[in-house]
Length: 99
Ligand SMILES: [Zn+2]
Image (spheres, rainbow, N blue to C red):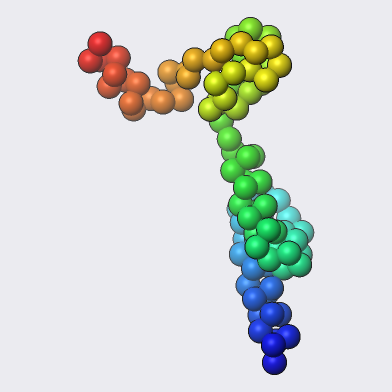
């Protein structure tokens, strides 16, 4: 009976992971297997992978290396990066208007 319960849990984790994988344009079956076989980590990986995939990026003005939007320092040349205006439209526009 305990094995049945585990199978049900694995199935639902697999289903959730598969759906997440499908949403991000990857294979439902692949993420179903990963999330089902390693329930918590697999599902977490599916979710994180999706975010990673859709993460906003930008180019370092110093060396042209593509970095994450939220990076404060370029990983390649060490250039300090200002947070770009385009990425924080609402708050930045308010602040600019006030100043
Ligand atoms: Zn750089």
